[in-house]
Image (cartoon, rainbow over all chains, first blue to last red; front, side, top):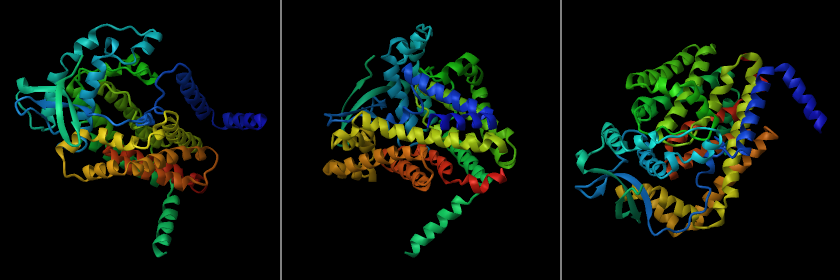
Length: 168
Length: 282
């Protein structure tokens, strides 16, 4: 069995040396990332929805919020699939804000000798201003900047139960 | 019965398409997807000044940041816009000069940079459009290397889908009957609020009433993904795997509102192309 694989690998190396190197590089990359417990993309991608989910009292979603109307802004009335990025950005804002040095991969990256400063956290402070402009560019019906906030909204059965500023 | 034969006929026709016909289809899908992303506010010129500058624990980020590509492409609105236009232009050129590899290679490299920088600016580590890279990869090579590159892409697609199922199995997403119905409520919580009479809301209500149906859907998706392990050992089930990809992403679109991933169905070509008949035409 082993000699058959070895023979096939050697003949493949002779015929297609460049692709052989690519095969080996990709294999090393995947195995290396697995051993070092790095993010193994794209293998890890579909781990989405892999955890069991138990019934919740409320379902949380971070959304742009109109303080005057006291309700979230409908991100689903936008061009194309803009709503996806409008869902992701405020969610990641919360995740990054609450991570050490504003990077959830901080521990792993530190192991690989990457240095961090507070610059990324400083930048995050301007998120709401930037997100306000982004929402406007997506033609959302927006209040004035003063009446705009990104909030955690709690839903159940299609009803808004409550909302609160994002905890950092 | 007549329908069955018509479908069989159509499948046979698809599987006898040559390399360049698939190349046209893949490039066209990628071109339409990039136009759609730009229309949807997912171009780099839309997010170039986002305060996020996320670096994942992944080799691709190290490479891009070490090379300073982030500073170059995201230097200003104009540079980001130029990059987006260049990517679309390279795909158009690759479509026009279908027998030429140069523009395909340019498109593939630009596509990779686009995804890494988009992730960095969204603060989100997800190579969620990896299918585009896998589908494009074999076209970057000439007659000698195109076939092994095609198989490499095919293996990577199998590996990815198999692990998708494996993680579902390993993390025991299947162990709670009502889990999918809860995931569904969580995914669409805000959507239900804004669109209380939508089709999705009715599905949500149905899955809440009959969580076992949601469980069956989840289980079938997991098994569908696990079945990609067959692709490593035989090509006998390739047509089934190809239409599993289509089925999976259609469900992802309809049920999870993740239509943006529909473009990944372009990977179907890796399971429909029959190289033994057509490789001589490359």
